[in-house]
Image (tube, rainbow, N blue to C red; front, side, top):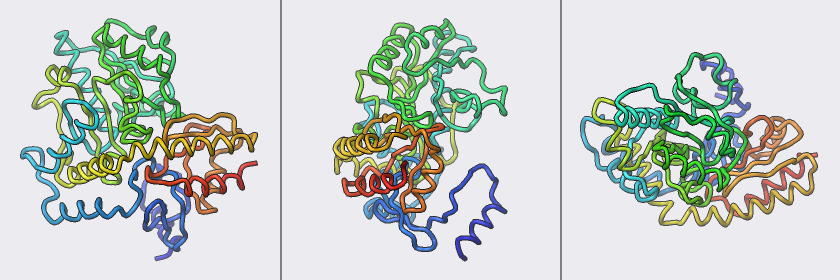
Length: 395
């Protein structure tokens, strides 16, 4: 079947909730993707910050194939070794104490919200607690995750949503303090806002939030779904700051393409929150995803992926700064490691479309930001090629 036929069939059969680009991607190798017509693309999107190891990593593939031959699923009524080993490695990488594996990032947020509410319920003996989230944030499309996503456009058609959510301004500590009440049980934020436009938390802001949480026994929930797993040059972005969350959400590169997420918490929170019967999942943490997570963490630690991101991220920063000097349409440059963005005064969707035509995959964030979230294994030559393509597109 040719590409056009596939696209026509998709438009006929799939629910139209995505405005897809007109390509059918068929295979990948290293940091490149190939469509059904054999055209090669340099990938600077990595499946929206998922495919951290690129494509075709032999060790990763072998681990998945071996697990397929052994056991895919058992349910959480029984133990399985791969997910236990994955949890141990994830705890070591994060410094957290307890792990719950989910199927997605949105489900990780749902679990984090439930844990925070149960913690407050156990502490106070009643329900009715509130969450403070950030304007411009994105945490997922399920009703709970949508309730704490700070974009009214995403929420309005599905209201009423989860009650007791207040929104503050990101990187504005006073704005957060204004929203705190006796009902506040948690403050939720992305350490680096992704969909909202690539905004890293300012050091004074996140440290101030952490102090506020300690003083009021409010739980700090950090969403590391996009910015975690080495993307900023540390295994988790909050490790750049003098903070540690009470609850953390992870997904995307956690499985490098296998659908898996997790929420993690400290022992203090675990001891006073979710107990048997409070939360569950049929597929979450099955042997297959456990093998994926375990292998990803093994590779990232052994190959020092975060250190590589620090180096290549600095090079990307320099090259994007040079691009900014050459093109007046670039109005701002933000980000950390291999999670960077350029604000443009020209339509970013059109730039992304032209890049695709020239064999470069780039995605956008917010309304005016070109987003750079490539596989974490890119090298300087890939940055140079990407910049050359953009040099030829931007006015």
